[in-house]
Length: 249
Ligand SMILES: CCCCCCCC/C=C\CCCCCCCC(=O)SCCNC(=O)CCNC(=O)[C@H](O)C(C)(C)COP(=O)(O)OP(=O)(O)OC[C@H]1O[C@@H](n2cnc3c(N)ncnc32)[C@H](O)[C@@H]1OP(=O)(O)O
Image (cartoon, rainbow, N blue to C red; front, side, top):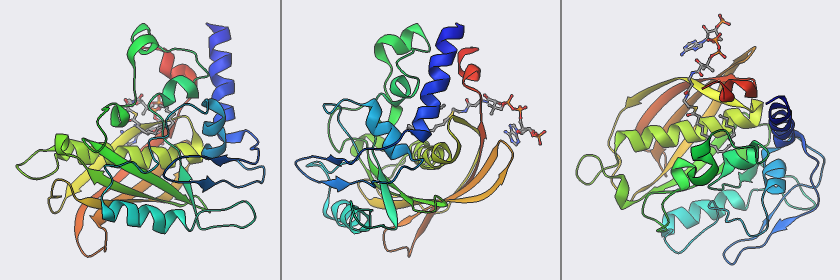
């Protein structure tokens, strides 16, 4: 048990502190250059946990509509390259993050064989959650481009409130993880202002409001891609935890 805890602790440390080697992710649809400086980034650490064969779900696929691709390219073009800074960094996204984040130490027997990240567990491209998250250089903001698939229906023709909550938790949780991994959501407060038509692409933006010791207060809004329509507003509280917290239950 102590050995496992140590491995997990080291892995979470790696998660935010590993040095990064010069690298580019090759992909048929996109090529994203990462920074070359030694920096505390999730991008760096995550990349080191995965084999080149692991699928990065935050890269374009054939299900992405025009608006999704347009916005992906808009933010991706403002990402840091080999020799220049940039306003944003794209976060890679895998379907077995927890396994890798914990250094291969499984947290339960179920996880050992079957666990997959909730938002990345449907094989059919475009059927559920298609999204890509970018984090700002100062790490105060994240922006997610989210295309909702047909399996996320709640009210007829519109996105389920639970699916919207999931995306808000995912974006604010990724943001909090960058700032202080590992974290857990302690509170999520959501106001649904206008329904999201199923299939639409929307922006999910998060902003760090305040840090108080272990607490991270993050606010979030979901809008149409031109910003003219507010769909959802939320505030979230994350607490940074000791990894042993995950092994108690
Ligand atoms: C998990 C790590 C993952 C990392 C790797 C991922 C890599 C990225 C990959 C993919 C990105 C995807 C991202 C998805 C993210 C999803 C995240 C989730 O959905 S997490 C699941 C839902 N959340 C729970 O199940 C928590 C259940 N609750 C708990 O475990 C505990 O209550 C916990 C940890 C939240 C707090 O427990 P305590 O024992 O550590 O802390 P106490 O002593 O209770 O509180 C500390 C302070 O916080 C306040 N506090 C606690 N809960 C509060 C609340 N709900 N509202 C307001 N204040 C609260 C307390 O009043 C206290 O404040 P005072 O220090 O006295 O000022």
